[in-house]
Length: 210
Length: 256
Image (tube, rainbow over all chains, first blue to last red; front, side, top):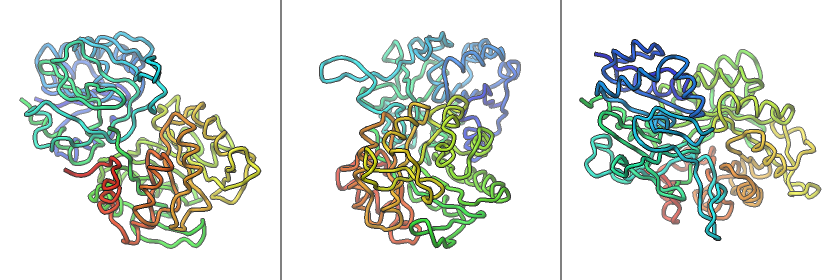
């Protein structure tokens, strides 16, 4: 029984490792699809370009391994780009993604005064600390005070097809799903590994998930 | 709503935190790793380490500092100073930093911004600039390099826009006129840049009391503010600064 962190060159791989190590987790970092297939818990990090991330996953044979993990029902945690590419598609270079949760990762667009849409009203990337309003009583944010802030840095956001898959929301010009969940897969747009004590708590909650 | 960030800046020389006034007369004030851990506990949103060591030997010490900081704090931090190549960037990012800050080197060779952004993403590349009021420039501010000693022909606003075009994901503007004075941030240049570019702008230089942060968020339109002296010498805690800023109706992260 092992926790693995999927290595697909994600920019926050080291930070995730450091945070998991700080929590005393026993884990392995791997890019080997066979090791992912034997995992009993999967952390799927991510920073950077979603389309590039999908290419690296495909090159390393990790796409099927992720599907396999989802089907086997092991707890999976996606982070940032790892929250976007579990959807069907990303608008970032219009790439096909893993399709584990129906939906699309969309580029931030804001309504202007004339009713048109553009990406200029607020700064992009959405970078900094922002409040996460979670579904009351959800296990992922157990022990985290309501309205706590987490660290975000992203230009695309998860837009699940079903509102029922959104377990937390955050406001940045629009209200978007900052955490999504379907079955054994939970994914967060923020960076728990860089969100101080509340972020560590989220990671600990995931590590305790059965 | 996105919160305004309070960032502590630590100047590091030969592995020790140091602080100078108007770029001169530096004195050692502590161990950067211990200081980082203390500010983390106190609720700082982010940290910036500027390596002001010139030697190659100091460079190695800095990487070790970055590595040890990453083990202790679980918030974003940035490293600047002496970064002249993609390899230098890779070294500090692999050691655990989220961002690298480029200053004089980016003026001498702007392509380093693009190279870094292509390799590590825009969010990892911060363009820091030292600006000096100069009525001869179109925006009224001139970019100076080499720790504020060498004036360039660059206009501060034009350079900020150019840097964003090249791939910078954040701009830090340090006013040389205000640096170390504790008289408050230079609001005019901060607002010019904050309104003039599409990426976050961090105000730097001059903070002395918590009201200065309120001013630079309200009137300077800054997305984040750097503090140094006002917390390094124990005059204020991060918590007390944030309490003051929050009381003014500005959203900041508080521990709940």
